[in-house]
Length: 394
Image (cartoon, rainbow, N blue to C red; front, side, top):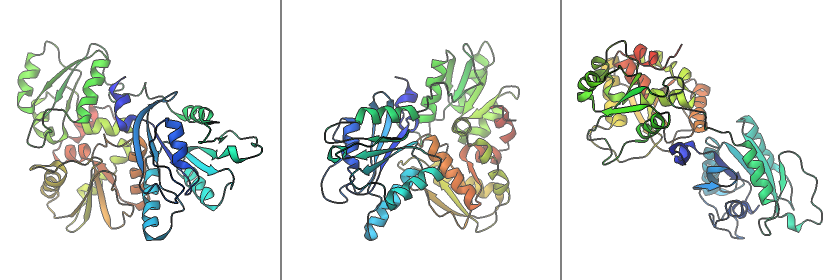
């Protein structure tokens, strides 16, 4: 199995929705053939989204998500429903579990409207079909199932599988390299680097180069000049960690294509053109403007952390003003972006494509420009045009 298949952000996210006691968790357990979620006759047994990365035949590697009931009540119930709405941002395929003995009601219609407004592919799974005297004829996106007896579960899995896009032909470096090329990866090992391993964008890019039959040469910024001099042929591309853009650009001959891992991932996930619109907002910041710096992962903050220390310092130095910075990480992206002047987002390697595009759409709807770390850092270090030439942006 390739690394792309193993990484959670690269797996299709299949989420199960429905009202309380529709048998949602029972259907999840039947589909996965595991006791993934607690099952009980008590309303609201699933109180938080439950996630599991797994192999699911005939789909392959997937991320399965069980959500709380969408009809939950009270103050705590409202929080659970909001958590469920957050899951919609990263859902690729939705399964709406309906109690077949009750049929479609207001809750189901609200969820279907949500699916349609977000452009989600979805299937209706009418559970408890074993309690019906006759199973109705179904439409293209409807399946009658029984989590108790297993009837219809294989049909449901096949229906879900028909929605899954193949990602085998999608590449981070698509169109940039060919078999036999040499690519130099510049990877700083500083206080903020994780001990004993590479971060995910570096891992994925390196693995893809090997899969493409390229030669990958890795070095730190201080070793770049010697590395380039020791190569018999110029590399097809130099890729750097964004925070080393300034020194790497100075050490890389202008005729060599140069870009960053962060820009490559923005290109890969499809939001690079939209991110470019945030450059003008960065240039026009004023004192007191609210700037959200958002990361898709959660990690222990160390001295020299790029999100909370380096970026705010670089932005202040570049603009000559003192914005008001806020920070978010993991899944805690704000639902209300009102009042923010701009959003600076990481490359999103830990988030799936749907989540990154949802966040970009939220920013666009709120009129808040968004750009990512790589674009912002390249602009602030005067190498943006060169970094974009490296990925052949027209």
